[in-house]
Amino acid sequence: MNSKPLLQLNCVTKLFSIGGGLGVVSGRKIKAVNNVSFTIAAQKPVIQALVGESGSGKTTIARMILGLTNPTSGQILYDGQDICNLLKKDRKYYRREVQPIFQDPYNAYNPLYHVDRVLNILVKKFKLAEKQERKKIIEESLKEIGLRPNDVLGRYPHQLSGGERQRLMLARILLLKPKLIIADEPVSMVDVSLRAMFLDNLIEYKEKLNISSLFITHDLNVAHYVSDKIMVLARGEIVESGDTDLVVRKPLHPYTKELIESIPVPDPDNRWKKKVEVKETYFREVTDENQCINYNKCSFAMDMCKKEKPPMIKMENGQEVACFLYREKK
Image (cartoon, rainbow, N blue to C red):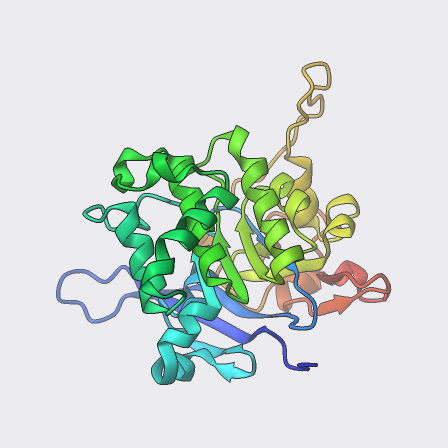
């Protein structure tokens, strides 16, 4: 049995330069991702959610794992190998092992290629079947994810609905059978009626094909439905993680609690009655990198929260939380 994690991020940080005008070499730098570490185990397939609001760094983490951008510091390992080195040595192997599902299903395809050509290139490149068998396995994969081959083959991507294009991404997964899926907001542009079908497909891939997923979303309801474990990301830092049921039903970090309390209940008779006062926070107020990232908004903030970052504390139930409120409650 493989003892190495399938995916491991070690203290990964990503800096971006902003504010540099024409002819200016470098401007101000911001940390989109700050010292992020987590693992996805290899022994048992899992769907691990990464949840956070817009601008929290979720997509940057996905792009680094996919090798589309390099970390400024830290290391990303796949099966114990640094992906930067792996992509240089055997890019084709890594591309088959780790497959993306992007938020925008239209931009994922070459608009000049028929669906047939898109899938045939995939089958041919990765030698998934002999020439006479290619059409058969493509049609089988389409049927498996609820698409009728006669309705999609021979058409261009723009002639398909958003839901059809997104399910084509699932057909790619079914053909390649990777070890890991990086799904970045995969259902945010899909009709509600198709979301459950899409999510159920991911769960089926985990259970029947042993495919793990890093499921990136801003929607805690979706994360709760599909994932086994959850990580909460705030301004580029993981502030809480653990089994999904525990984190959603008994959140520990004040930021996680705010996210969950902000979810509207689908009941017109159950309205929000309490008025929430939120302090107006400006980006320029957050100048000390050593303070807790939630200090300016947290109603439980203490002096030590302004002076240093809280460490990640592991609780008895397995949850991990970066908050001084729990420093003596292990």
